[in-house]
Image 1 (cartoon, rainbow, N blue to C red):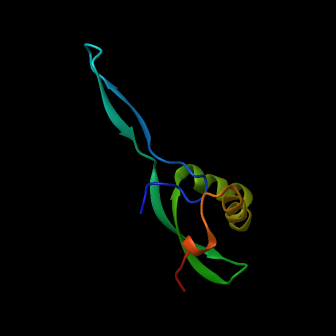
Image 2 (cartoon, helix red, strand yellow):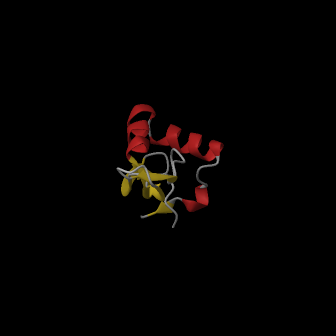
Image 3 (tube, one colour):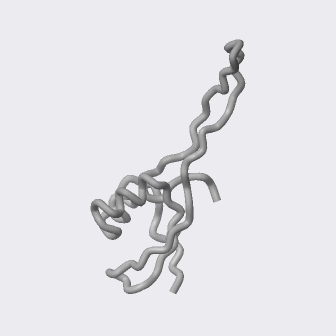
Length: 86
């Protein structure tokens, strides 16, 4: 599974390591991703999301249902990619 947040669509960025002598080598800036379980009240089931810290704050702000609908509308995730636990 790729390193992409299912709510905000954040993904790894590419940049440079800059040494003291200003030599530049490529590196990646990874996203702060983790697996989190949520209880989805509308469907009465538990779901598991691969989510960033910013995505968790967004869910706390607008709610799980609104965040999922917005993510599907933006194309960050699909309903078939959301894993239902039980």
